[in-house]
Image (cartoon, rainbow, N blue to C red; front, side, top):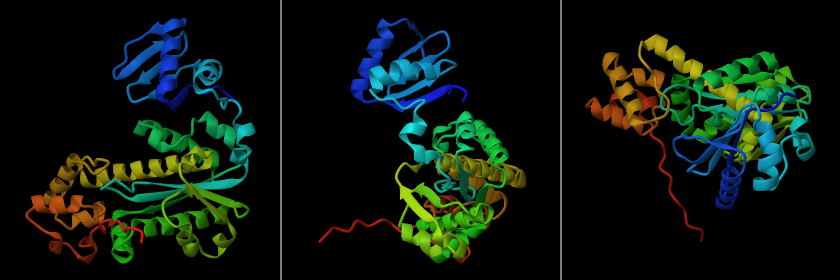
Length: 329
């Protein structure tokens, strides 16, 4: 297995203190990197400790630095090179499920399922498969996604819920988690049709596991479902997160070509202005084809146009339910 060239850690205050002492006293050349408390380099490795406590180790010698300096002296644990010993279940046959686009005003929600076994885990590690939220470059996410699709062949599934379908589903279900449960169940079913012997599906914790079970059809009712926090540490879930992200980004690119304007990610003020301009150029009803209408962002867009939700068709009039805290008796 080729050596990894990039590692990211979140260090405690004590760990940061130890690392600063090592980099200050050892044979490291200081460098200047914005927003770092200390940064240094060796002949083949860059070490940047950011003010937030995030540590980024990159370069040809990154794995060697982590194994022989960072783990024994700072982290006081050993994991790099011992993944299969510490977590043998990572290579056992199973699928990971994850989604992208849930918090983005524009574009679809995409749910992906990716299969893994002992023949696939090393090639995935070589591709630097990790949680897509830790891949800050869209270009890199799309590249890894494309390589993953080649590697997996038929052993993945994508469920893309475009804005129009999403708005119809939300107007009926009134819950993002219910849409997620339905989408996860469909992705699991679709992948089981291709890999019927897959025994287990792992996903992040987003709601009741029972809601996914209820949405499963005949093929999926025998599979073991596991939901857990930070499930992206599982390689199959990380692969699914990248596949979902790639599909989401491609959907935004297609939307840009269709409407001849830049489509931004997220739900910021800049995103709102794109929606306002698009609705002015087309009509307010274009929102049902391009955005998730239950977001509060829709109200702000309509207000700038001098309109309200009553000016939209029924599926655009449904708003997110406000969260109410219930005290325990």
